[in-house]
Length: 458
Image (tube, rainbow, N blue to C red; front, top):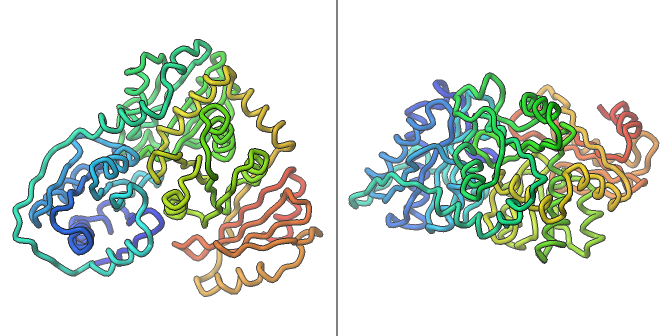
């Protein structure tokens, strides 16, 4: 047996190597024991899978094992996005198991456990699951396996959140949906179809190899969508990652809109147009623009370590207007404490329709509202071994200035974050968690500062 570890979003490994029938059985039994010990045998377990290779096979194996132990298992009758399964965990008061590796390369598969609160499992939960590996339990109850369509519960909830009528009435919208071979196919497009909203589409089938690219809605993997938008007039494009918990947006100029900008635009929209109240939850790697907007709106900011399990935990505690991370995941008040890329894309359409403005115009207004433009970059610093991480973090922690700029504040909730004296520049140095390297994030209001800082510390 290879060592099985649950990272920030579950256990992931290469199919046919570490991710094999035996290890799936071990992880399934460990999760089953966790549910049995903490909820009892009568707790329903729901199971879903994304379009990856063998995800359907291994997820069914998991379902049959748990049924044999006595659980009632509702098994998705088709490919399903993570947010759809997570919402059903909440709606059905069930625990969920999702077979996905999210945005990772096609050869990977993973198992994600979602408790009945519908968000990522905390470290305490995953530690208990890992400690259960190799253990057994028994219930003497006859289980039941039921194939289930989970989509309608989700569609109903999204229709309560999104003003589809306003989107439909916006005749200026020209939408391209890049299915990107992901789990959002049959969900995002179906919501548009159900509400008579017109759109064009590409890559609308499930491909275990994701078209030879990566299942990640970033510019380098959305080039066909970008070319399509540039060849047309006033089109915008949307995509999701492999399991549809992350989003990708291309504006009318064919430019990628950063998740930080999306979070900022949606915070303004939800506050102004839908009268949402509360705070905003962001990670320490999130843009300073969100802090500036929050201050202007009189909204408190809650910062968490990087990773949506931390964001989700803060959502359950504070019920924010919006919560998200710089890597392309968000959710809002009244929904689930889990990333929902389908909802994110629909909220952008809604914001444009309320304002009757293009996305490019909303970006311009955002920049004017903030008073400057922020630029983000991230580089990875490789180390020889894990033992070098702590001393290197300590080295950065002891710095008093960088590239001639005085450090005026430090935050150690996730690695070390250094705030510089211009009040527009910060540096975050944090360990990757899976390999001996440091992730170095830098944000500033111009590229010259960023390059000076990079030269000084990278």
